[in-house]
Length: 120
Image (cartoon, rainbow, N blue to C red; front, top):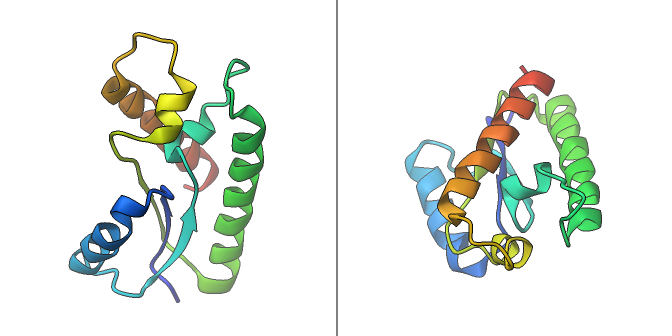
């Protein structure tokens, strides 16, 4: 049995710190890992998203990995980790004057709501 599946960004700057943080929280080598740019943004597939096609396939792939982790490793948790200064967010929202921190919160809330509904 594995405790969780972790969805995190591909950003090289956070690989070590994410592993260290998960270890400190008691997940030492006890999680499956799924890596994708934009993390919570991929669940907000707006038609205007320049990465829409990527995000659609990543979302499907992540859902398949969740189902596999449930079936094979009997996971009990799904952990999603966003970070500030995300290149996918900057690319997606490049022509907008939005508060990117607020957009991270908005997109993470959408992701959490979706995951709670689909994987109670």
